[in-house]
Image 1 (cartoon, rainbow, N blue to C red):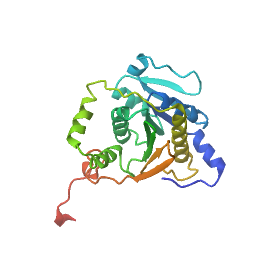
Image 2: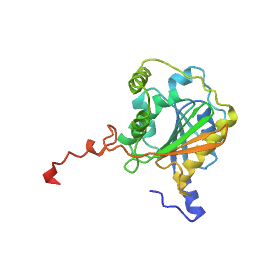
Image 3: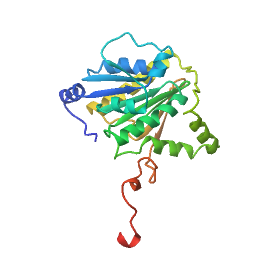
Length: 244
């Protein structure tokens, strides 16, 4: 997918021909949106949950994007269907548990768009992975890998199920300066993926940045062979040993 362009003009033309959808609401989303506007993209659609907009979150007062509130998962799927590239962000870990699986399902079942995610957890920024359907693992693969290291996976699974029926919220506590740094990384990775001005550091890789100590960790995402969302067994029947 990522053949790096040598000519700056080629990269610029790639940006100008790209329709990007940003999904998520909150302070991080606003800063990422501001960075995307500076990239001279063909169009930017900001998809936000109507419930969040009705709860008091204000629309940014700058121009250069389409404000696109959605009411449910099907509505979100329609709004992301025309995008060439999708970015999903969250201010806290709770919101990412709600939002990112939805975007993953849409990416795999709809237009097969590559998408990049990012979220904050206090002073830590979690950037990536960059998911490319058919080439990398999906977000469900990442969840399965993470759950292998949890001390109480059953309790965590129950907690995730409860999020669909309870409006549990987590108060974001990241200062504005850390959000600015995190949004800069997300925007830069999106630019590399779209314009191919360099190989994205988040390609099938989760990058964790401790913004207090400026320390970085990289975690490579390997596909889960029997992932219940993107596994090849979902589309191909199992072969008998003597048929192989």
